Image 1 (cartoon, helix red, strand yellow):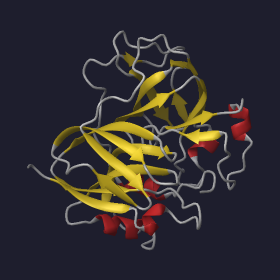
Image 2 (tube, one colour; image 1 turned 90 degrees about the horizontal axis):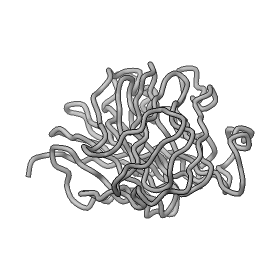
Image 3 (cartoon, rainbow, N blue to C red; image 1 turned 45 degrees about the horizontal axis):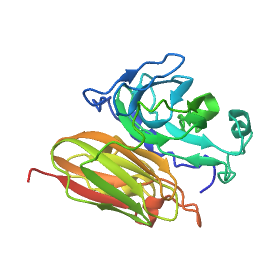
Image 4 (cartoon, rainbow, N blue to C red; image 1 turned 180 degrees about the horizontal axis):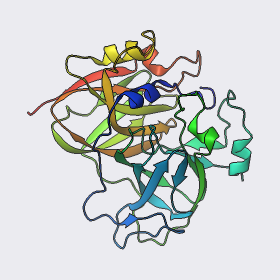
Length: 295
């Protein structure tokens, strides 16, 4: 995929939808507000960091302990936002990242490690990733109505992951469901049912992928949304609403997110541009419809 070339279709979804209620940190997890330094929980659980998104800023602690980190994203802006986590390797810094051209492919030293995917204004969601010590960025690639991605408007924030004290978890939290990302589909461990779910997302494909969970409007299908987002020119009301997921992760990477699911039809979709032809993966068939129903 080319750098900063994630499609703009989710922006149109956000512009047409009202704010939705979404996920909160699990009971018993320690929440860290936007102080200067985040601290690990006192028991082997993920460190929970609050990330506040506005137009156009991401507010989070400057230092976070290594291990499993749950980012609790709050959207206080008027546009849709996400929190993509990128690890900077080879001694690179935020200044190096800022110098990259928008149409350049991602450099080898910038590793996509997930994070909470896009939510509508007023929404909130969580996603967990295991972070090793080093320098990181969290940013939003979603564009504004003028087409300029939010990171180019200042929605990019560096932070440091420091060596852990041994008090926090070193692995992802246990998940009741697993969804594997492959070229080009989603493989679920079992059908999802109504209620709260902790979902492990594993990238088993050779390319980078993401998972966007969409709640479909009555009578609409995942293919309706795929058509609306591409060849349909995004005309008319969007056939679905984003309700969580995990941002871009590299081959072999994984992350966990939580979702409160009501009965109904949902879509799983990946917007990441293909490494060969630049088309979003949904155009290669990486869109799947599921039904959430009581067993």
